[in-house]
Image (cartoon, rainbow, N blue to C red; front, side, top):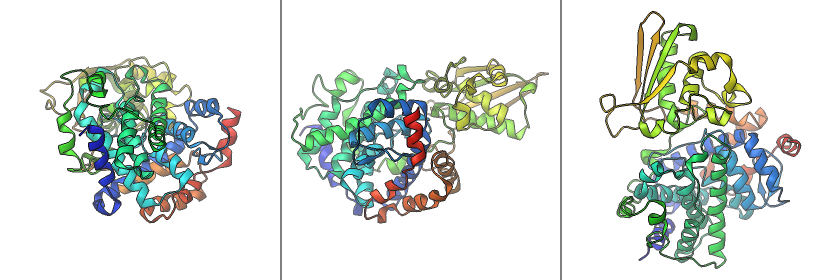
Length: 462
């Protein structure tokens, strides 16, 4: 049996009634976080460019944080780009990327057109999440290191699976959707630090939805799109660089949304910088440090993480999100790292630039961390006069379901993000609807709470 059909049978076997309570809990965490960061990202310059360039005319699906309604495919592209624009969205260790943003913008666009209950939506989300993560298990981390952006190149299968599930496609149609998605997968890490990185996700969400709609309407594709000698595995990874045998035995054992789960970001920048930020903030706060006291900062992170975050001279706000030097300088100078630090000309701040010149980044060794830990960081601050201070972090808070952010921190992040677009009076209703998501009769009622006139006017004027 071809893998596309094996996947399809498992996708369609997943029902809301069979989900463990932890899966429902974490799905709602993912919803809350993704809605918040999408609203905040809707005003990002890159998101505005995408919305303005499409200018596709009226349709059924809401552009979040506006009153504009466009075709479902365009809504998935626009909202998907916004969801990743701030690099503040959730992560997953198996995927090696961001699991929710390929899926949820596509599902919301589809649900806004056709309607869907909260329970059907959640089942589709979990099915898509499981699909992308288990496929990732077979191709990572060679896939990631080779230069592909897994959130897009693997996430497209999550979006296709979720949309197929919400459309109630049969096994053969769902298999076809996955096969179509294999030819729509794209995204290279060379574009990290630019507006194209979030565009990867918008395109991925759109392509996953597009694949499901095409399969529904009868478009054909190769059932062997994964395992063919010129299929996804061989083309994207190459012979000997993947292990497809890992995928099916691990399916739902446990569900990936439960373990290792969803990693919630505390800072709006590349997750590879987060353990170092945690360590720097600990030292700055515990020792009441100020920049004038500091002679040198040494930072050690995993070589896989450092490869795209060793950027001592960022030249844009997007570039700064991937600069461990910039992020550490911000953590020291302001004792926080927030959205405003990645807007406008913030990356040119003279005080921050002065500290950045004293930051020296290097990969850590097995003497510092076990070989299988690629989420740790160590920081050593050398003060003027020679005294040194050190801090180590094995993994940032919120990185796995076993080390979650407290509920009040989740809500605080959501409110701070949503307030950048929505009026404060609308937030209690939206938050309550997300918390009660499984009992929604029609998701369109929740989506309507994210419409606001002012943002639409800003997009038109941009």
